[in-house]
Length: 46
Image 1 (cartoon, one colour):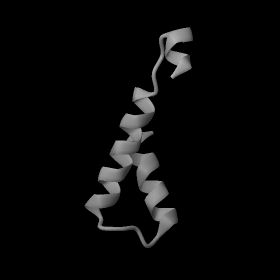
Image 2 (cartoon, one colour):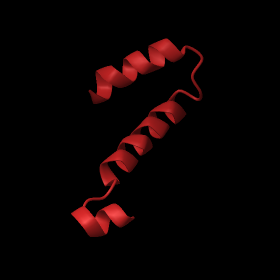
Image 3 (cartoon, one colour):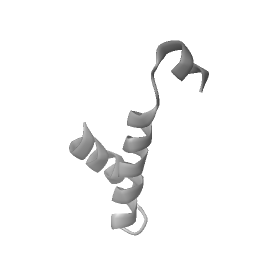
């Protein structure tokens, strides 16, 4: 919160990325293979 007043920057991009990860995880109803999940995330959002 103080960062906004000092630098006029927010964490909106990080919150947006977290929302995309949650939506992706909900799409597959849970993840069993963590390695494949991380691979797919890097392919979609990197």
